[in-house]
Amino acid sequence: MRLSKRSFPAALMMCAVLLALGAPQRVRAQLELQVTSGVTDPIPIAIIPFAAAPAVSGDVAQIVQSDLEGSGRFKAMPRAQMRVYPARAADVQLADWRASGNDYVVVGRVSVLAPGQLAVDFDLLNALNGQPLASQRFTGTAAALRNAAHRVSDVIYEKILGIRGAFATRIAYVSVSGEPPMQHFELIVADVDGANPSVVLESRSPVMSPAWSPDGEWLAYVSFEGKRSSVYVQQVRTGERRLVSARAGINGAPAWSPDGRRLALTLGGSAGNPDIYILDLATQDLTRITNDPAIDTEAAWAADGRSIYFTSDRAGGPQIYQVGLAPGDRPRRITFSGSYNARPRLSPDGTQLAMVTLDNGSYRIAVQDLSNGTVRVLSRGQLDESPSFAPNGAMLLYAAMGAAHGQSVLQRVSVDGLTSERLTSQQAGVREPAWAPFPRQ
Amino acid sequence: MRRSLMVALLAACLALGACAHKPPAPGANANTAVPTTGAGAESAGAGGAGANAGGTEGQAAAGAEDAAGPQEGLLAKRIIYFDFDNSEIKGEGTDIVAAHAKYLAAHSNAHIRLEGHADERGSREYNIGLGERRAQSVRRALLLQGASDGQITTVSYGAERPAVAGHDEAAWAKNRRVEIVYLK
Image (cartoon, rainbow over all chains, first blue to last red; front, top):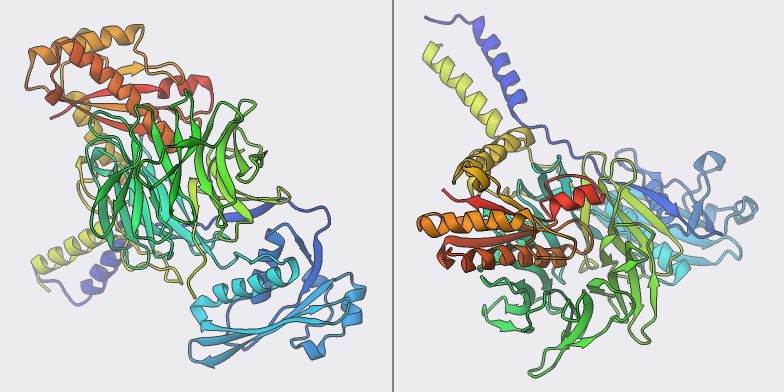
C-alpha cells in the first residue's frame, strides 16, 4: 500500500501525540517557604522595586524582600504603599521613607552589559541618619539573576545584623513520593529558598544521608540500589558518580573531612557490627576508628579535622562521643542529658553541637554549647530529625513530620531560637536536608 | 511513503516517548545527566521510566522473590516482629525462625536474605544499626538451629523502607521487623 501525500502529515501528527504521551512529564514543583515564627519587632525596611532594562526578566527587589522577610527578622514595606520608585541613592527623599516607618531603604537598577550579561547595582541607606551602608554591583548571566539578588540580600543582612547572610547557598534533600511499601526517591539540590530544584539522583530504592564536600562540588550519599547499602560520591555539576564503598554489610553515614580528602564511614561487615572508619579517597586506605560491639555511627568531623564526634549506644542507649584520630585516643562521652542523643553535627565555628534528642517523649533538635555543656532544645515537633547547620552557623535546617498529610517537611530554626520557617513540597515528603557550604567565589 | 517505513517511524516515536527522560528545565543548577539507579532486578528496563511503570516493575520484582522459597505451613510466614528498641526474637517469631532453620538445614542450596527494619523514631543511621541488630539476631538463631553461614546474607533498611505508613504504635509495630527473602 502506498500512502498518499495527504496521509503523511496525519502520520506526523500521530507521531507527535505518541511522543508527548510517552515522555514522562516530570513537573517538579519547588519547595514553598513560609515563616512560622519571627522576632517580635522585625526591622522595617523599604525594598524599592529596581529599575530594569526592558529586556530583563525577574524582580530582584521581590527576591530580596522574600529573602529578608523569610529570615523572620525584617518587615518589608508593602509595594502598594510606595508612591515613588527611586532607583538611585541620590533620588531618595529619606524623610518620606522615614515617615512611612522604615529604618532602611534599598534602591537598585538592573542593566544589560552585553547580550546575556547583566549588572545589578544597589544602595542600602540608613533611613534614620541617611548614612549609605552599602553600594555594590554584582554581575552575572541573565539565568543567574536570582543568585545575584540573593547576594544583594546577603550584603543587606550582614550590614544590618552583623552576621554573614546565607541567602545565596544551596541545600540538598531527599524527596519521597508514593506510599509504602512502593516508594520513589529523589536526591534534589535546590536554592536555599527552595527555587531551582534539580534532581541529582532518582531511584526506586531508598537514598539517604546526603553530605556536601567542603568545596560544595560533590555529594556523598547512601543508596540501596541492588538491595544492599552502598556509599557513592557524585559531582553535582556533571552528574559523574563514583562508588566509594560497597563492602559486605552496612555502608553508611558518609562524612567529609574538612580538607575534603577523606570520608568517615560506618561499616558493619558481615558480622553486622557498625563501627566508624576513615577512608582516604586518593589512596583508598581504610583506617578503623572505633572497635566496639555497640552501634557506632553518624560520624561528624571537628573543624580542625583531628577528632570525630559520633553516635554510640555503648552505654545502653545512643549518646554522642568524641574520639581523637591520633593512635591510642579513646572516645569520651559528650552528651549527658536525657536517654537519647544522636546524629551529631558541628557548627562551622566548632563551638556548638546539634543533635537529635529525646525530650519528654518527643524527638527534637537540640544544640549543646561545647564550652560549657548547656543544652537548648530548639524545635517543638514529635519526630524531628537530621539537623544541618547553615554555613554561617546561625540557623539549623532539619526534617519534621508535616501537619496535613503526615508527609515530612523541612524546617529551619535560628540558633538563637527566635525565628523559624517551613519548606514544604506539594507533591512529596521531603527529608534529610544538607545545607551546602558557602560557594567558593 | 512505504508502509514499512511508516510503521518503523511510528515504532521509533513510541520507543523515544517511552525512553525519554525529560531533563529538568535549564537554569543555574541544571545538570547535564541525571543518574537513575539501574542496577538490580528492581529497575530492569528503561532508565527513565515514569513513576507508574517503576512501581509496577518494582512490585513484579518483589513478587518474583515472594514466590520463591517454601510455602508450606509456617514457612509461608516470612516476617518476624520485634518490640521497641529490642532485637530479641519472641512469641511466634521463635516458631517461624525454627521452621526456616529446619528448611535451610535440609536444603543446602537454599539461600535467603534477611532484611532488618526499625520504626521511624529517632535518627536514621542509628536506625540502620537497629535494623541490622535484628537481622543478625535472626541470623544467629538460624545458624544455631542448623542453617549454614553461606546460606544467609543480611541487609538493614533501618527506617527507610516501612511496611506501613503511619505515625503511631500500630504502624511502628508493623515496621519493627525482619523479613526473610528466599533468593532465586
